Image 1: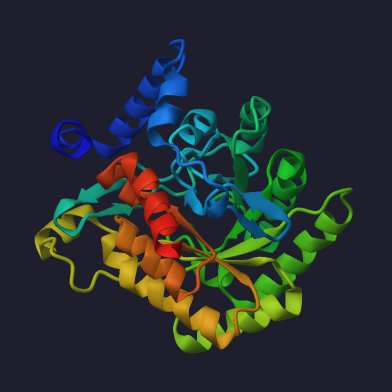
Image 2: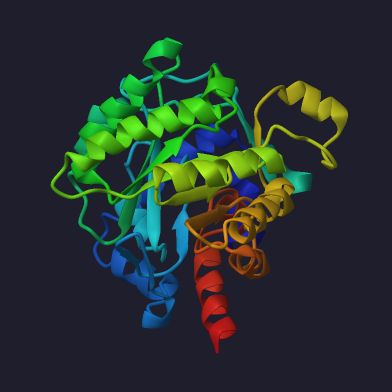
Length: 345
């Protein structure tokens, strides 16, 4: 029903407006008695065989919702009912910011993809904490963190530390988002020396806490093998817990969308099916070249059970969906979990 009725209607309207409308609708529907339990009964797959134990956490299944969908931690409890094993909020910055000018979110339907240049629009860390205090612990929560757009380069690390310190009691793991193509000084954020400095400083704060939280690094799908080798060395040197591969791509090769259409859209990161093979290739390289020495969360172009199994076979320990959730609907989570169970038997 989603793909034949609901999606065609939603796709008639502006993507960002639809996103906010859907959030409000889901919030309202879940206030009706018994709706939450009915959604869980229909969408969730509860089986111990799906559990994954990584960096001290137990994920009830390996299918998560990627950052960018519930930026401000507004809907994670409701989204958990659809069967996710974990949900990543953010990207969260120290101060609230509106992000880039609209229009900034575009569907490329022929490619089953999305182009965005949102620019870390979010309500800031205090707002996220306020919403996370409503957490009923139905699902593990990841905190994807970044810097404010107007922050000077010499203060980037201070931004990450501020959000890390304040968000620490409220999330189960952290993701350092250093690979978003829609923020300023993108090059510095991916410089190996700077990443070493950033991770080292964040880990100092982590080690001061009563309970340390896992830290992962989110990387771009456009890195070459030399750059990926640097990531492997960085993980080994800093001993962070893992990598999320991957973020959106700046490459637009082989897209079915017309050149005129892409020119009209303008700049932005590509997600969905166009990045599927590239992200899987990055996962496979990191896994094999590092001899599986760290955990990998695979994301990028997961629109089917086959896509998910390919990511896992390439070396991902967990997977995340985002664009696939929009194009395929909430049943995708259930279908993937069932396929994982079937594939294990």
